Length: 394
Image (cartoon, rainbow, N blue to C red):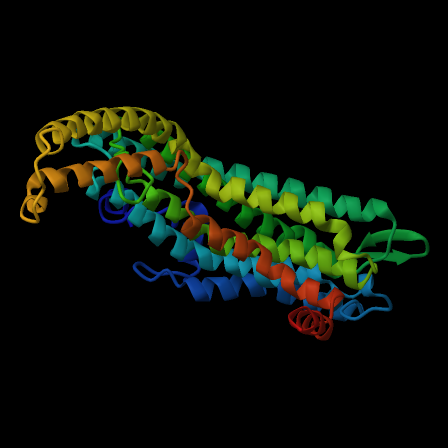
């Protein structure tokens, strides 16, 4: 799809870049058919299946100890069988939802006609960076640097695992360890890095919009100046939040099941992870906090001043003369105008100074924490949970 088509038909954070074009060459996706499920399964198998085959050749699929068993490594499941496919699946759903947000800026009049040329340039700039071969090369280099660092750390620990084998007191990579360091782990880091880059570009685009002369309406019924749709858009990142939650859950499952540690001892790590997820996925919309705060201050003053003037005239006309107000008089425009203006004042005062919404943030929190439920179930059996609930109810 050409850049002009993506700009004027449907802006999307995915597809784009050499990695996407490579998938086209490999027939994993075709024009107009992203083949999301096919690609998700393919990358899940590419990272996981060779690990299983190679580990089996050296009796490391199920070794003497849990750490020497690939099939007992929950961290590997979380990264390669869950996170990688889910991050691929999330590309299409996220792109569609964020594309609707871009259109909404224009359809709702938030971006004025005078700024449409600036909006176009911002979109074009984002698409160029999405298509950048240099950026993806840097991401690939960083992915391999992180993978090599991780593998070297495993080697230096001097502990036999399914990644590192011990022979006559010397440690070296197993066959599965070579695939892990050369393909599986770099693939995970690269795909995760692409997501981080796309989120950065999304935040950059929102910042450019926030710096335009956007129209924020303090009395808007959405109580967000007409920008509630921006806050709701953070729900588009629920799937990647779930994917990264699976990685954390896999790591903690290893600690709870194999090391015998208590999940309670990792509560601050879980809290920090949740906050990091919120900053990463909901943080970009905070660029509208400034315009919203300014609009609220001006709106409250303006509408309260207008309401005071209208209320004074209303009293002079209907109350100060001492005349009775009949039922017919209640239908006069003065009464409805005062009511409508009072509601505008209330809306302006209730207006949120930040564009975050429950519909946007709620799915992120749930998606990030749901993968941890099986770990909780491992440490606290379901029977014990049900007994505690019954005891509390009785």
